[in-house]
Amino acid sequence: MKSAIDFATDLHTRIFGVLEQLGDSWLLGLIARFAFAAVLWGYFLNSAKTKVGDGLIGFFSISSGAYYQIALPAVEAAGGDVDAVSFFPWGLIVFMGTYAEFLLPLLIVVGLFSRLAALGMIGFIAVQTFVDITVHQIGAESIGALFDRFPDSIIADQRLLWIVPLTVIAIKGPGLLSVDALLSRCRPHSAPYVAA
Image (cartoon, rainbow, N blue to C red):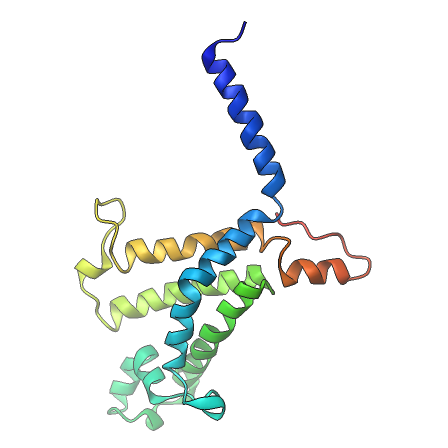
């Protein structure tokens, strides 16, 4: 006769084993992409919009605000004249950072090149954090600390939570409900899409 602990352990293993098998190839990636879209896509889209001009034509024009947000030390060294900032490396960094902020989140949401886009966003968030701390000199109270009892710091707590769904996507993939999975199924002679 089984003990109550053995019975509970077996029941737990059977129930969650079935759930894990049912959702393993599609659920984690979908949930991670949904969380990213629901919480962060609007944030990154609005942030990216501040770095380009207005309207469709303005989209192809980097605003001076982008230089102040991304490359403030270079702008200050140029006496506040954005046009005097050299293209290499600063203009290139601003250009790539601006359009990466539009492109990478979109790729994650639709599930296209998702793993690379997730890794790119993790790098983007790392650079964003570095710039916020070193250039914009966010104070220690906003930076916060991990493993303290306050879960509301802008940098340590919030950005760690941003990186979690991106890490899931990078490791497990976007799931079967993605453009990546669709393209994998459409390619002749390719192995079927496997999330992990």
